Image (cartoon, rainbow, N blue to C red; front, side, top):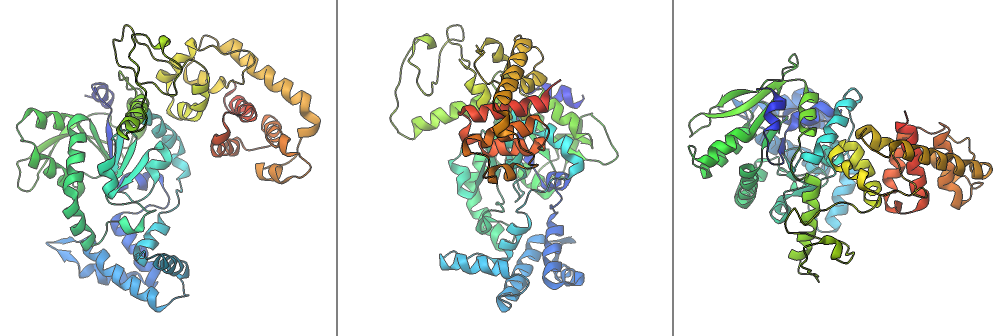
Amino acid sequence: MNIREFIENYSNHPVLFVGAGMSLRYLNNSYTWDGLLKKISTDLSGNREFYLDIKSQCQVGGKYNYSKIATTLEAKFNKALEADRDGKFKDINDIFYEEMEKENNLSRFKIYISKILGDIDFREEMLLEISKLKTIRKNIGSVITTNYDKLIESLFDFEPLVGNDILLSNPYGSVYKIHGCNDAPSKIIITESDYINFDKKYELIRAQLLSIFIHNPIIFIGYGIGDENIKSLLKTIFTYVEPNSVNAKKIRDNFLLVEYCENSMSHDICEHDIDIEGFSTITINKIKTNDFLEIYSSLSDLKLPVSAMDVRKVQSVVNDIYSGGSISVSISQDLDSLRNNDRVLAIGSKHTLKYMYQDSKGLINNYFNIIDESNNQFLEIINSVKISSQQWFPIFGFHKILPEIKQYEILKKQQKIKLDNHLNCNQQSIKSEHKSIEFILDDELISSSNKINAIMWSTMNDKLDILTVKSYLLKEKVNLDTTSYRRLLCAYDYMMYRD
């Protein structure tokens, strides 16, 4: 069976289990466990052999114990920085003492880890694959990761959950960071004591994850077949699930390991046996390949009865109910008979209840998410939406995703005419030779009321880098209900996606 056929059999939203290999594939500033400790050691001592000396003392049963290496290195690192307040690591000491003033006793070692992994520095040669990876988030229920960095949050816009937050969460639209996150140094799990404390508290988290594994397909990506994280997870699952039970078979059938192989472009799924200490051999599905584009395309094209985006919206309403706030409940066979409440959770026959956006606002508000996800399933409602000639509506990008838009020819002419008319009427006051948005915003000769118009003119006249305009629009999303924002969005949409 090939990867596309395998994924087409999914009947529920898959969950990604992401390891270090994923960050190594897409980020310049990413490391293996060994690589991260080696970097910190070398940065501290300036001597590569300093790390090798520590490593040589931490071999257990023929394998290097990296949590033990981290424990030793943390003690040496913290001691060295304490003895050299204003030296090479002055900024780390500044943070340490600032937090101590607040009674937060952080490890300098973990503060430095946070700094190393703080930026998201994408590998330029992987940007095409990264853009394809973004398109799968519409079908992904949640992500579980052992990584500290924020790669997944930056691409999926999911909510990061660390430590006890995992227990208070809803599975959809979340990143379960079971070993901590770089923006919370105190919660990073890396030393021996960290793992001991984690194991003591892990029981409830384990139960939460087990529920996800039983109900959703799980895709391991960024791990090798012999990775201890996978073996530990499988051991945990089959401690609670009878190996020969129906649930055990369901879990095994839902598991897929994506194993990186530099010289393979295979799309074939095969079975692989994993020996787990204390258990019989466990068989899971595996694909060994370097063609991640095909995997992402298959996940993006997956058609499920309800999108993960809609499930997250329902959860949002249900959370309000759980919170015990003021809830208004109406029972009706027909949504049209209800008042126009802010949010509606409808339960009833699919023959009498139908849900869709009633205007274009929802499409515009979700513009960048729809584009990034290539969410043609969500966009199908556009053929039922009335868009007046007075509206600023960005049709070009939507048409790239869904060529079957019935009103496309009318709407694209409407968008271009509105852009041209607006610029022609205001050209003298908004024309600018500036090459950056910052210069336009700082130019005192351009009135505050014309700043966005000037950005719009420069966008339409190729004076600005189009990706810079996108970044500005994303940053200014709080203003997306304003006419000026929608004008600029239409200018960006036209310049980015015109025929």
